[in-house]
Length: 457
Image 1: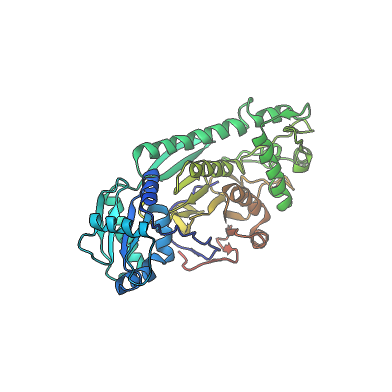
Image 2 (image 1 turned 120 degrees about the vertical axis):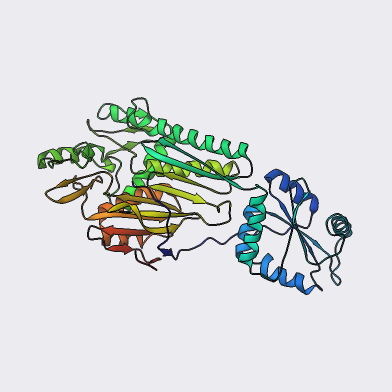
């Protein structure tokens, strides 16, 4: 896998999940308790909902705006203290709003917008001058940044044979660093489980006992093998974790190399094939032929990225990025309120960026022939092996897959590389919420139907 980089070139038309608006609260105790639990500021709105025209405009232009709701859901607790003239409020709410006004709005200004810290102290007053929702959001971002309430925490380290980069958005150093620690530990756990280079791992033990005996593995490994089998069925065998016996025939270092003999490839193909793997519900795995070899190289990093995302979300991280070699998954928005973006390196010049992709809520995996390859008589062969023929792939420089899951993107990037540009794009067009960008050896760009090129470098 190649590593994605940041840049701007492509726009993507995709199905976007509707933002679930966090309701505007009217209970101050609940609002401040939630603020303390989440360490988010309270955005207090003093309103006259049925008589104050500026208040009505603020509700129509800001409080119901999709972009504001998305920003607020991630970063604010919205509390409204309403003072209507026609509508009657419960007595308790009236008393509460009067107490809030005495403390935060003694002048009786409407609308009055106050940004409060979780401890109920005033952070700042916020002006509304009929500006657009985008400008209003930018104004709030600046206040939050100045208050150091949102910050990005980053860590890079080498894991699973690739450079992993973790970014989390947190409101304090302790939480941010703890989330980064947890991210590294989760990948280390998965690497210990799945690596093919350690004899004690599940994968190492399965391979060592090929043709000899079934091996007891973790439920997690068994389920990943079963999902890999499903992906092999879906891709008609162009993704196959048993291709390890074939990869041993090649040296992907860009050095002078001779292709293996036909009989050698045929022998390796006899030890290849996802249908040969025997898995039981009791978490045992058996490879029936000596020399069979499974590897999670084409799905493992995507799986790890997805597991880290799942873990961090469970621990309360509302925004972050996991980049694992050529696999990247992101959720939420940046500390400054901007979307996460990733770019794809130019296949012929890794210092250049060919295109960029917004990745909020999506995962991107890129596979290319410019990191691991070899040349034979002027033809460049990719490190990806066609499990059906036993030969390395040619004709494709780069494949990028965008889907809701890092594991899926990782596996499909390999499968589409094997399928080729036209067949690969046709295949991706049949899958929901899944998109691709393919660059062939001639530099021609192929895209799935929901991606539109808006600019060419």
